[in-house]
Length: 171
Image 1 (cartoon, rainbow, N blue to C red):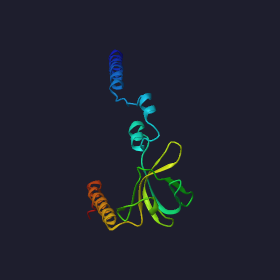
Image 2 (cartoon, rainbow, N blue to C red; image 1 turned 180 degrees about the vertical axis):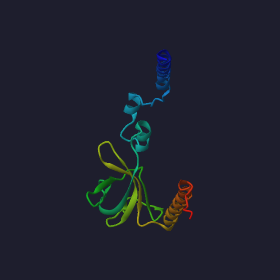
Image 3 (tube, one colour; image 1 turned 120 degrees about the horizontal axis):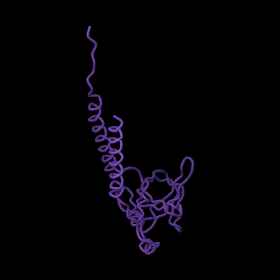
Image 4 (cartoon, rainbow, N blue to C red; image 1 turned 90 degrees about the vertical axis):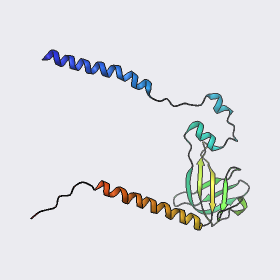
């Protein structure tokens, strides 16, 4: 009996030992850019190219009221409850007002704004997309359609979760 247990345990460890190196060798490796590729990306490189190279930078949504605008520095400030955010406008920033293309001159204080931005390595925020003014009718319809689809999906998954047989008391 002791001999059989020893054989079973030995076989188990032998299988684990042989499978372990295969598992680690088959694990996908993450490709990192070469030092030459990162040094060739200049300061004019867009954040989107930096995202694909490093995989760390992602556009973050923002929404609020414009508190201040600096035309010379091409920045605007969104006042927040705890702290304010300063966003920089670049040549790659897409600016719209009421669904129509706009420029830096259209950005004024005390106006609703929403969009997305990148956090740069130096800590500054670079605007990717800026939408000025309240939601347009098309955006409201799109938002409502997404909400309805989400509710529909939630309703479809709820009965499946409670599909377990219920016990009714019989008297």
